[in-house]
Image (cartoon, rainbow, N blue to C red; front, side, top):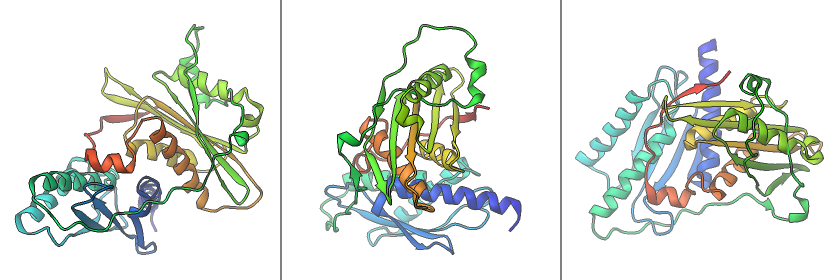
Length: 314
């Protein structure tokens, strides 16, 4: 495998992990080795009237040079409507060539289903899509008493002068525990890199947070004047975890937020499951704090708007 294909495969892995976290049981792996997946999409999660199944194959040079190979399965989708939907997906790919596109495709199809459902009469209602939640540890006694965190050195040049800003409020999510490893998310609204530093330092003042094996974080700050994002991430020793977390924030199109996931290692290797837990923790707290719609709300509200250009802060 050449270097370009290795980069594409890594992008695919991160995208699939994020989509699995976002859509839960709607997302299905058909053949991981062959990069074949499908997702069930409905117009309304509580009372679905229309559903479609998007089957996709990810070629080796996706996303850099080729689109996903796809098929939309829906008995009610015929002729001109199928062509219209396919054209909209292909237009999206052309507009975002070289980017990970699957989330935008899924939400475009969902938006199409919602519009179709409003325009059509009574339709045979399919079975509801059942979502499974993570088995979260909700025992409040197990939640650490928080207060501050290590800062990526790349931020220090923003912070040369004293300031009287208050540290933004920090929210703490429920834990996920698997094979004695515990994961917990923390979230704060941030609009400047200085606030990122303040939140991280405040978190790291707490001895339990400071003692975590890893404190992975990612943030995105939207710059109105440039219509672009400042964004960065930190693995804190959990190789590639920060990039995956940032990819989740990008796919969910959240802005002005810092998410930190603390992991206390329990002595048993989790393999790829650790990335799933990190993403699920992050997504749960983003939904809880209103930064993104839940799966049910997303089904009702339709697709996302076009994202501004992003700029990674070094």
